[in-house]
Image (cartoon, rainbow, N blue to C red):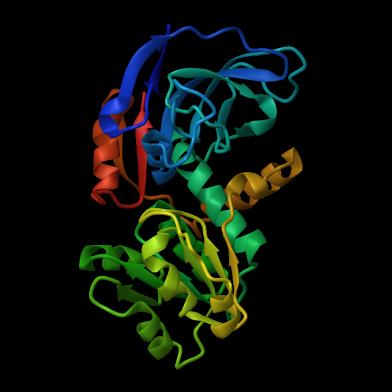
Length: 324
């Protein structure tokens, strides 16, 4: 017997319904897993509210999880019953069991728990492509990370520091500033109390940043541009404050011939080879302790409505995991 949290029409957290579902046998190239942990991400709320359109209704939100292989379909190689696995690029995670394409799964090493795996795949792979592919952060770079106490923000901060960058972080409270500092931020800006671009200029003595990682969106877009040095890169990878719209491209010229991109993880892990390389890179920094996955909240899957309310109210920090 399998269960799923499904959305039949977009709306608030109350539209998340826990229901019994029928699951077919795994098809060709598929693996069935029994999930043990599911990662909660802000993008889940975008699909629930209708900001991002699902393929069809009803649907189950969520993109990352971990569990144990129950059975494999025809043609599957490299996986067997009992293997511990995780994924971070397949929609429909809010379920107790599911069939997944084998080429989207990653085997877990013993040192990484199911909870950590569920919390790290989407956010960790997001950080990996942002830091290692979109813009290759190196020693001597200065980076600005918005929402540094959030799930992706904490990983970005730790990893960017490990790569030798000077990390400037923005957060919304003194408590979250302490989290950013603990994760290695060299400078922390309270964005509610301070002018972010002005403080960046002061911290860098006018040189500003090589790259800005902005998962907030609309409310931080202009301050992100104003924090970049000439030919700097803005990676606007999220919409926590709403989508950026109505952009005049001429602004990029007047502010320093800037580069702006709105990336998504799927375009950085198109092939199996890219996914395996990114996951290997991620697991390495976690196993060596350079990046620690801080799980600060857990909820039973049945309580996902409460989890969404807490997430949207900014009452969470670090990673949140739904448990089964």
